[in-house]
Amino acid sequence: MSKYSLFLITLLTFFAVACEESAADIALATPGQSSSTGTGGSLARFTIKGDFLYTVDAQNLNVFNISSPDETIPVATVQAGFGVETIYPLENFLYLGTQNGMLIFQVGADGIPALIGNYNHITSCDPVVSDGHFAYVTLRVSECQEAAFGAANTLDVLDVSDPTQPNLLSSYPMDSPYGLGLDENILFVCEGERGFKVMEVSDPQNIVLLQQITSVNAIDVITLDGLLLVIGPDAVVEYDYSDIHNIQKLSEIAIGE
Amino acid sequence: MNNWQTLSILMLLVSIFLTCERPLAEIPDETVGMAPVYYEGDWQTIQVLGAQPISRLHKIYYKDGYIFAGETSKGIHIIDNQDPTNPQKIKFIQIIGNSDIAIKGSLLYANNLNDLVVLDISDLEHISVRHRLENAFPQGTLITPPNYNGFFECPDPAMGQIQGWVEQTIQKPQCWQ
Image (cartoon, rainbow over all chains, first blue to last red; front, side, top):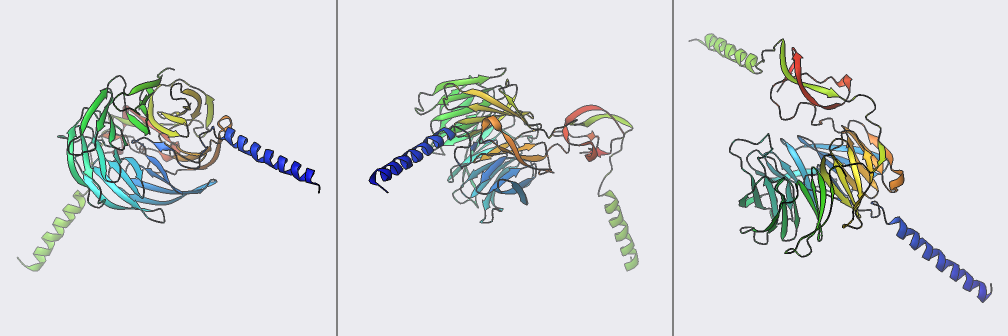
């Protein structure tokens, strides 16, 4: 082989590699671009962790093995009590919002969750989010037919640093709290037709309301590192919160559109 | 009182407790209660349509620059959100009875009433059903009328999947809660 043909081969190889890369770039513009899982809102009832899909129904936490794309295998049904409403994944834990309280499950190496802690509260409607140290639970009476007499609209802050002993730290009155989203020290709490609250939570004993944005019917949120997705019955609205003291509305897709 | 008398009284009490364990409601010949509405036709067909108008949203999911907005019981709007100042609805996946989704890689897991369907979304122009797990959620929330106390018409599994409940006049209802 001459030096020239070696150069040609090198050149061709270079182009082949370069072409592959650009083909990969084009393929990136799809929701399946990364092999990871997506992000759900706090009202989610499905979540994926590794090779397992976890779903909640009224009483149970269901576990499915999804390691094969061609087969979904039910592997366990774990009793979770009464009125299970939401599931929130964090590390090896699953936080369940139920009508009577918040449950913490630890997921074993086999994917099977075991109940390790719970916090009971008066019957109401309530999702949960957590950062592993603190959990934020909203309790809603408004538009919640299951709510017990005497229940109130509140945001409860729990110390979950020992997940076997969730401990109520503080409780704040709310209007009609639905879903919520946490990004480090900022907590967004949906208040239905009253919009959503932006709260600073670095001191759980002294949460500070920074702002309430009332121009949207907010049911649930997703925080994406400066981008806030808000969903209500009639719209998807997006905000830029990279400057928390100057939240900017970016766009809206509304009912009928 | 001798032992036999004590035993007899005990047995009498026990039998009363046993019969009283499940107090029977007095079943009316006719009353106003809830009756199931069954899905007719082919609810298992998953259709991918172009962008559809939003009517009643309930859930949100995000992955890789795309928003998946759940249209209550009807399906999922796929919104291209690579430019958050100009999100574009691009597809609507019609999934009857859908309430929840989760995505891993390019596979989307969704409930289709009480079935679990797994969709391949690697190419949004050619979304396909990869597989289906029938009756994955037998404890579906619609087996009894939600948020309701009173008589209802017992669901008949032979009639298929329940779409919802309506209030109507029912005869000799055998179910109540």
